[in-house]
Image 1 (cartoon, rainbow, N blue to C red):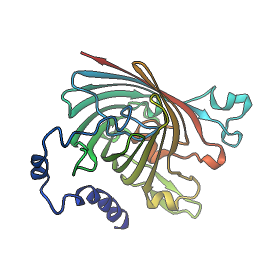
Image 2 (cartoon, one colour):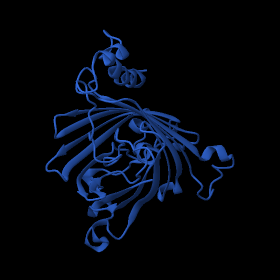
Image 3 (cartoon, rainbow, N blue to C red):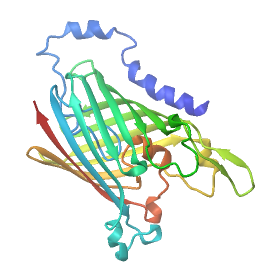
Length: 303
């Protein structure tokens, strides 16, 4: 109950600023000139691991390639003979996101990790404004399917290949340089592992996981910024299963705008790029050399 309580509190926070006044009546009191929308909270739709509240414009197509190399530290399989992880590829993702309206976008993508194929929907509920609307609110959801070979009978029922992620993204831009977001997340997997611990007890991973993520961006120059995010998952299985340690994904990066492209150089302990993979399956630690170099490159086409 504690994890659900924390998750609910994080979500309720987004609505508390409107407890005294009706939102629509507040907006009607201001003219567009007096209460302009706040834009460019983020440069792209993704930080390191987390989604941002940024959206593809109407009739825009965002083509994105993300690459994550292997572990850099020698204790985690990296080191000079592995060119500090550059010889390996933890995950590669190619995706397309299309803006149906200014508030609604859909997307598809394919990742190397778990051979994940996913479809997503992203919808902006509230846009931050200069007066009385203190943050932007976006809901994001995806459904993924894992088509990899069934080597242990886990996928005898095809529905066991499905997994889902739902996020509420709450972001605020503070001045011209700093942006911050809070991301309550719900992850559901139709199939999970059952394992035996060192004492012979059978432990079953949770089908449902609740997480809270935070992300930030600091603008250094017009074309250069720093990005970071962190996701904590509430999980009794991850706390009690000692033979396999699980860690919270932590990512940092540099964001570079080069004309029509936005380029990210990142470092994180998460192997998977998508929430469906990195939230339940991050097993590498920064302290043990489990950080991975990566990059994201985005190109937007307007039709």
